[in-house]
Every structure is written in C-alpha cells, then in structure tokens.
Length: 80
View 1 (tube, rainbow, N blue to C red):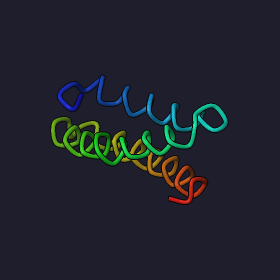
View 2 (cartoon, rainbow, N blue to C red; view 1 turned 180 degrees about the vertical axis):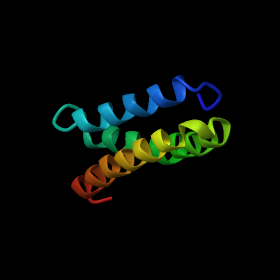
View 3 (cartoon, one colour; view 1 turned 60 degrees about the vertical axis):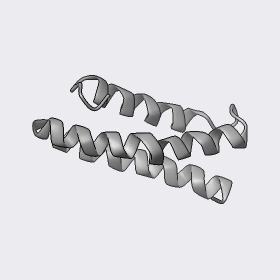
C-alpha cells in the first residue's frame, strides 16, 4: 500500500471510516483488533508512504491525526 500514492491515502480514509462507524456494530474484540491493526500496519504504512511521496506529506499528516483521534476514542471506550 505504501508504494502507491492513491492506495496509501484511500486505505487510510477507509480505515478512518471503518473505525468511526463500528460502534454498536462490531463486538469489542473486533474493535480492539481494528485498533491493533492501526498500530501494526497503518502507522508504519503512513510513515513509509510519507517517505515515498513527500509531496503528499500534508495529507498523510492530516489523515494520521484523524486516524489517531479515532483510535483514541475507541481505546477510551474499550478502556485499552
């Protein structure tokens, strides 16, 4: 994902959407797994994509901040 300028952004937006709409739909275990996936896969992907496409750095910065906010909200709800 980090090797494509379009996919790297689309996947972040998709994960933000998934996180923001999962409350009341997914079980707590699945919500926790989605949060863990952000730490394991999405944050490293954003870091690599920023290196690969420095002209898109402002977008990665913004989406990374929104992603972090969604993660924080879920972690607070789940008491992680």
